[in-house]
Amino acid sequence: MSFQKTILLLTACAATALAQTGDLGLGTNPEAQGATSDVTPGAGPNGSEDWLNSGMEGDGWEAPFLSWDSLIKIDRKTFYANAGATCKQYDWAFQQAGDKHGIDPVFLAIIAMQESSCNPDAGGPTPGLMQVACSNYPDGQCTNDVEKSVDAGAAFLRRQLDDNNRNAIKVIGNYNGFFTKGDQTGLNGGRGLTRDYPCSEDGKAHGMPQNLDYLQQILNGWFLGLNPYGDENWLGQYHCSGDCSSGHIC
Image (cartoon, rainbow, N blue to C red; front, side):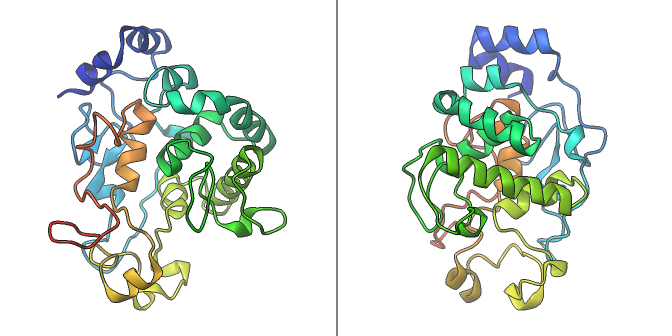
């Protein structure tokens, strides 16, 4: 299905908003390799998944450069009207944290949707809307408090932008625990993230990351108003579910 048709199917309201903003269409990001005007399981306007995941088939993730400022994305109004409807009630928190850390609030809303489906009560080792490590909170204590969680997520995102020359692929990958050889994490024998790492003994022991489709789902999914957890669950080439059963990479 073409990107244009997919967007039109979302709702007439969304289609109207897209036509008015001109942010989308059938164009491609000129900085992105393998970019396609149609969204497919393995590609879209912000690049191909094979490019986004560069190196995972070999010696480890290399994180190619894609400027944060070049990203093709929808606006908050369109996002809230469709795929991000659950996040609308927390717009005040995204706006507040976005203003504080100099980040477009739509990025925070999108990450919250990917991380927790905008559920402030989402559990796990990093609870809350943004599912960010406890070390990002001022007191080092995780909480499902909406304001604190969004601020912690925005603070982490701000540091990633500053430390990685606004490389969108590195920034977003780091949010999901992707790592390169230069990250010096010691994981995967000191190599970057590889396709087979999540289901290796080391990968299962550390439990991170468990979604090799993360970059594709965000950059060519949520950013474009598509829902990888819903009607567009065909996005991605790995379909990781957090387990290593037959048929899954991770």
